Image 1: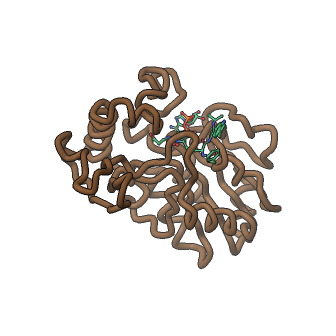
Image 2: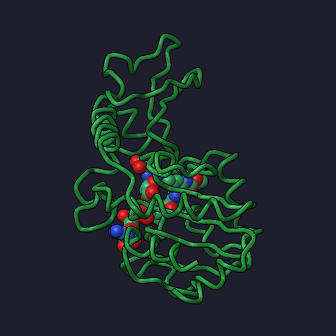
Length: 235
Ligand code: BV8
C-alpha cells in the first residue's frame, strides 16, 4: 500500500473504478461471488432485453426488490473514504459499475454511472424518463401511453453504455496518473478496460485475485471498507 500512498500524494489526476464489491460491506450481494446475484438468479431472464421483452413483470419484480434493498442499505466506510479522497484533487473521477447510488449517498460528486442506476426508468418507445422511488415501479405502469414499455434505466448485456459517461470515463483514464480499481472482478467490458487504459499507475483493492491482477502495478489485498480508510489516513 505504501507505493500507492506515495503515488496518490504526488498525483494531480485520479480515476477510481468501482464494482459491486465496494457495496458488499453495505450488505448488498455481488454478482459472481458465492451468493452472488448471477449465482442465485437466471441472469438471461432478468437482466437482458430479451428477458424483459418476454416477461417485463418478472424483470420489474426483481428490480423492485433490488431497489428496495438498495434503499435500506447504507454507504460503508469504503464509500465515505472515496468521497473524502475526491476532496483532495481538482481532477478526480469516480466511474462505477454499480446501480445502487451508494457513492452519491456517501457524498461523492463526480460519479459516472457506467451501467445506469435504479433511481430512474425509461420508456422503450418515447425515451421518457421516470423517477423511481423506494416503492419501485407499479407493475400496472409498465405499458406506457405511447405504446412503449417502461424499463429499468440499466445497461444490460449487449447494450451500449451511456455515451457521455463512457466518453468521460475514457478521458479520465487517459489523463489519470493513478487509477484505483476497487471491488470488481474486471470481467465485464468495456468497463474493465478502463483499468489498464492509458499510462497511469494502477492499483487494485480487492480481497481476491481478479482478471487484471497480473496487469496492475500494485495489489492491495483486503476489503474496501477496511483498506480505503487506512489509505486515506496514510495520505
Ligand atoms: C457492451 C446490469 C457494446 C446491471 C450488468 C456479446 C454481445 C455483446 C457484448 C458482449 C458479448 N460478449 C461479451 C460482451 C461484452 C459484455 C461482457 O463484458 N460480457 C462479459 C460477462 C464477458 N459487455 C456488455 O454486453 C456491455 N455492453 O459491450 O456494449 C455492444 C453493444 C451492442 C452489441 C455489441 C457490443 C454491457 C455490460 C453491462 C452489463 N450489465 N449488469 C444490473 O443489473 O446491475 S453487468 C454486472 O457486472 C454489473 O453491472 C456489475 O457491475 C458488473 C461487473 O461485476 P462486478 O461489479 O465486478 O461484480 P462481481 O461479482 O463480478 O465481482 C465482485 C468483486 O468484488 C470480486 O472481485 C470480489 O472479490 C470483490 N469483493 C467482494 N467483497 C469485497 C470485494 N471487494 C472489496 N471489498 C469487499 N468487501
